[in-house]
Structure formats: structure tokens, C-alpha cells
Length: 333
Image 1: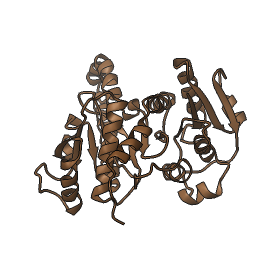
Image 2: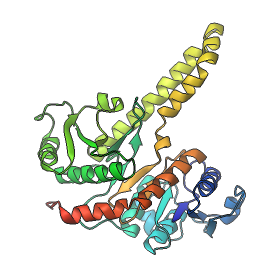
Image 3: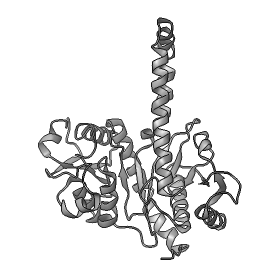
Image 4: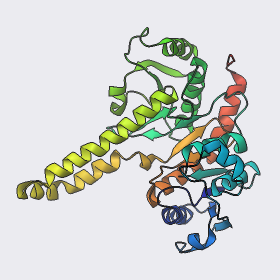
């Protein structure tokens, strides 16, 4: 299996990207990784080149670049080259921690979307209190959505959750302002009707307050709402841990208690770290494209590689393609 990785994308590139790649090839014998980026900078952190090759380029898409324009004009950018390797059949999947919009553009314009999928969805797996996690889609690939798009998200999310996460008949919930069937706006009401008739395990509407309780395995919504939910969960988790840290270091007695509780607190922090589940998959493309978090460390990069590897091994993209061909969803223009 061959994976292409944008070694220059993200806040901690290329060091953490390289370290994560090295850990991955040491863990998985059948894995070959191509790191795309500045060769001299990559080699500074490359302890072993076993099953790792480098394609040199000194062009990078910056976080400040306009996504579509950057992909079209910066043909030699590390992210673009990684996506091109997938299109050319030289890699089975690609990963980047760089500019999210640019990666989505590269996925659409270079890798290409599956016929019948109108709009791919950006989909991270987020933590739950019980540790199972849930897939949320879309979180920003499409700000606006139609009911038919949400149906496609549910289909793709169900396939991924079953194939990669091993959850049989994953529970699919529609994010809404209440659990009653007639709640919500025109989008959610229309989507509810479509999801109820679809060949998925649809459990109805779910509320944002119940997401971390594990109310569903797959939660679908439009990209605008999904992105706000993602940022709220991330921000709340960071704030809670900051408040805990402040409280547990406020006095000598608190510091003593913190010393005793430290192993449990570390375990709790790891449980709530969504990078442990990998990156956000861009579902609906002809091959897996993974968006790692911009601040990814080596472990987060490793988990994104593991996720991409599992998607390739379980033929997720091909399964989505066949499912759409079997039961096509007509999107009105």
C-alpha cells in the first residue's frame, strides 16, 4: 500500500509529519510512504528511510492562500503533488495537515469525486464519554446543503463506520433542535423524510447536547452547522481542561490532589482528544483524502495514516461508489 503525504502542511511541519510517517512504516510492514516537500528539511528529521521516499518541491500552499486559486496556480505545491500521485495511481490515498479549503479543492479537482455524489463531506470522528466516538458530517466542505446531500452523507458515513470502525448497523442521527419528527427547518424536515425511507439504521433527530453521550454513531448536518458544532466541542474541551488546571494548581492542597489525580486526568484528556481517531476524511472522492488537524503532532499524524490505511484496505471509496450506483440519489439542480 502506498500513501502520499504533504510533509509541509500544518503548524508543526515537517518535523511531526516525518516522525508520524516513520512510526507508521515501523508499525505496518506493507506500508510505503511518499513524503512530498522540501527534501533537505524533511531529511533533518528522518531517522530511517525504510519504505519512505521523498519527492522534492519547495512550493507550499499557505494557510493564507485562497484555496481554489492556490491549487490551480501552485502546480508544484506539496499538497497538489500529493493529490496528483493519487490521481496518477502512484498512491492509494493522500494526507495533509495544511490549508483545509485547498485540500478540499485538490480532492475535487485532482482526485475527483465519485459519480453520483454531488458534494463530498468533511467528516471527523469525535470523542464520546464512553469512548466509542461518533462520525460527524459535514463539518465545512459545504456551507449550504440540500436534503438529498444529507442523505448521501448518511450513506457514506454508514459505510465508513461499518467498514473502518467495525460497527454493524451504525445508528444514524439527524442533528436538529429537538428529537420530535416535525422539528427543525425545511432542510431538516425534508432530510428526515428521505433518511426514514433509506436503507440505513436511521434513529431520528438528535440534539447537540447528547452528541458526547454517544446518542448516535453517525450524525449528519449541513457544513455550516457542523463546523460550529466541531469548533464548540473543541473549544469547550480546551476551556474545561484550562479551568481544571487552574483549579488544581491554585493552592498547595490542590497541587497535592492533582498529583494523585494526574494519571486519571491524562487518561481523560486522551479520551477526549479527537485526533486519536485520525483526521477528517473527505468522503465522496474516488480515493481516500484525509485532512489531519493543523496542529497535529506525530501521534496525530500516525493516527491519520492508520485511518487512511484502513480506508484503503476496506475499499471504502469503492463501496460508496457501488452503493450510489445501486441506489442513486437524484439531486435537483
